[in-house]
Length: 96
Image (cartoon, rainbow, N blue to C red; front, side):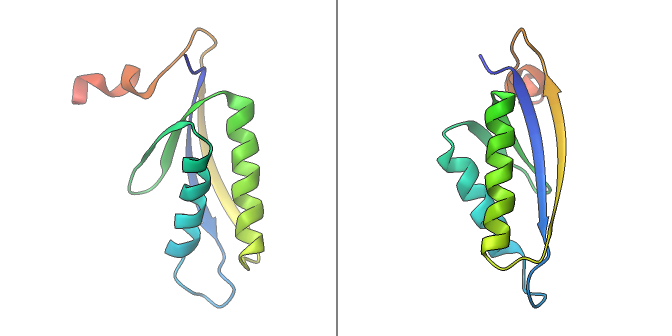
């Protein structure tokens, strides 16, 4: 079972003030390719997995934004670490 839930909002500064959606789509692609369970929400994406692996993935996301031409990137992160295990459904099941 996963030990962490991490919600990520990435805000790249685009080179010429372009729409950030293609950049965000690329960040979500990196999340999808990680193989970790995730859910995309309107303002952030939540990932379920190993904390170290998630932070490695976030580093890759930030580096990719720069490769795409961003001058800088703001990444807002919320983390729930629970050594006994945690899943998104543990927190949201009653709402579904």
